[in-house]
Image (cartoon, rainbow, N blue to C red):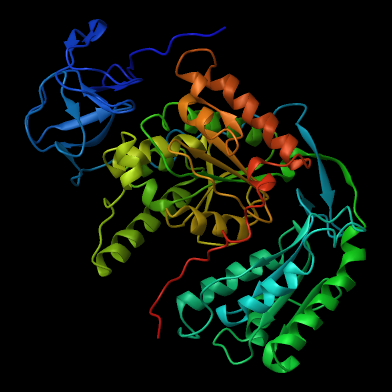
Length: 507
């Protein structure tokens, strides 16, 4: 049954603004608010519902999203021209709202691939990793040899994918940037979704192959191979030897079958990009509802993008399983404040131009909506970038807000699925972990249906509740984990989206 989208939404009785659900012309009467719109308000943007004095805080979700830079009249557009971020105190109330998860008596299941060591995969790739940018072309040439019908005899293998990057040399061998790069590469090398991995280096780079394997505890074997271009005698010889190495892996990689396993083996990385004013109303809380269902079945969800929880971190610390876990969140926020300051930046340099066009004004507003992706269960642990995620339930990983970098860290940590909410229309894909795109509004979903996996915009017109949308997302997670391709997989996306976080000076 089709329903008409309302003119606006009030999210909380204490809010100073309401959200336009469609474009509002000057003179539109918001009767229940007893407010007449004073100017054109784009869809997804905010309308003041009371007089706000200059310097006063402005609330959405009953939380501060900024401070008025000038007097704002009822019915006025509230956006970047009259709202800014300022410092204000937040009560972290460590663990005060924590409640132990109530697990369901019959956990959900999916059809997964069980590795010999007990790890469970949602996909079955062979990966070609480069230690350094200098070996990227060789890695890509090896992978291209297995395109088209080259894998016809190996139907159990999802593909051979080259994951290359722009770093690996011109950096401090003993620095934080090198540690992070090696941790990321090792996380991919061990990832359950890779049946086999070939690591290709140049030979003289800062990220030496022997040091990578030694520091990360990697060992060569039939399904873990390593080679350097200089050691093998150049590009052509290295490509040929790389192709032969993959051919030797293929029969072993193909010898798999899916079987019924509990959803506790699913680890979902939570992302949002190209957000709009509806992200915190539709797709993000719907994904949060799906996360609650996953956690109650014993699974894991990784919330990330530290700059995009800034100003809302107190909502996580309250749900922390312990004070120590909550304090880790605050420590990462403080690290980012110092990191941005030494790079002559600021934590409030977000949202992006696309976010602002969609109705988001400040990082505080964006963060409050972003945190909704994490659902309502307790925060069990906090991890630094690309660290192995071992805790069950909702966890947090410190990453940048830039989606490919953030998701790369989550996958390195063990995420075998990605769920990505978007209001403007991100087309992000991921390998080796499938990425699901959740649209925040119906017009964008209909315009970009080839890229969007689920439409959460139906929440706006009341034809779908947040919980119903969450149930649909959860069911799609299970189906995708069982082998059903996502829209981005059908487009072949994911090979170029591997972007490790680059820290430190390039020398």
